[in-house]
Length: 405
Ligand SMILES: Cc1cc2nc3c(=O)[nH]c(=O)nc-3n(C[C@H](O)[C@H](O)[C@H](O)COP(=O)(O)OP(=O)(O)OC[C@H]3O[C@@H](n4cnc5c(N)ncnc54)[C@H](O)[C@@H]3O)c2cc1C
Image (cartoon, rainbow, N blue to C red):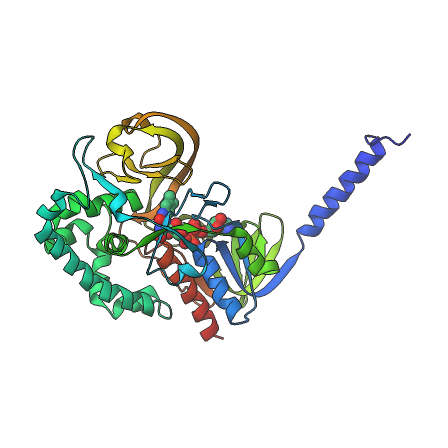
């Protein structure tokens, strides 16, 4: 009788396996452009190149990156919402349910809280008007800046707009003081910005703060991300692998994948998170990252938090927000890992916790260039937070590659 575990059979299998690894280490895939990283930045670059019939390969160890949408549960464990103005990111993610601003509550404590319809909002009217005009001025500059960033590097675009350039190095707190909306910032805006970034206005720059705060003045929607549609769209141009090292050769780059495959390309777009980009390219300072922990729980919230779908908290609280999900469960975002959720829940059962140890690169004034000499490009949210700036940076790299040929 044939025995599966005969010594001869095992030896044969071993030879086959080692031959296979040996063979793999010699595979070289040659492309004109290789994009490393399949988050919104890398995907936006790939989409733009595909639309122009360009030759490229997108290599990523995961699709979506900090977009982590569970189609089964219809829950986002990473990026949560898109704004109406997200024209570029909107090509890869879809708008879900509108987040109703009247269903949001801003808390100072278990007892002190107010929704937008509260008398408190009326009391703040003069400051709210000042905030509105400050945002109107910002949005004129910012929309023009984003448009320019599709074809100019962020540095070039900032060079054309000193207003935006100054915001990159100005702490958000200084902007708030200068425009005199401190109380409105404390009561509403900083809570919203904290819920989006995990940090208070004293820790982020004005550009990030105002970009995020646009979500208070325009409709925002839950997002959905369909991995199948995206992977079908790119087909064989999408490869699952992790790039360990990048070497520069004569007029080309050689990338070593964890699978053993080598890739070669004239252009590379490094669209990985800033810390990985820094390691792969062994250069430059990057901004420091904040942490966000997303707890998914079945819970009975305390009475103060039960009425509203979204509860927002001040930066002094480790709990950033609670968000009720379609199936009745809750997401609770925290800025620390070990947080007592009984601060907001009467009781809860933990379903899962998704840690983002490098959630967003928000601290400090470091600035990552997008073009590093011939053929080497960087895309991502390194200099500007969120899905739309990351998508725009990906489109910029695709445009630069096409213009440079
Ligand atoms: C909890 C949380 C909530 C957020 N909420 C929002 C929100 O509501 N709205 C909003 O606009 N933004 C939000 N953001 C920010 C937003 O998610 C990011 O700004 C954006 O997704 C960054 O996209 P990216 O493509 O630059 O990077 P990433 O999404 O991080 O993509 C990088 C990709 O590179 C891949 N990769 C890494 N290393 C390698 C390697 N060596 N080889 C191959 N591939 C590699 C990764 O797998 C990943 O796919 C949130 C972020 C977090 C963490």
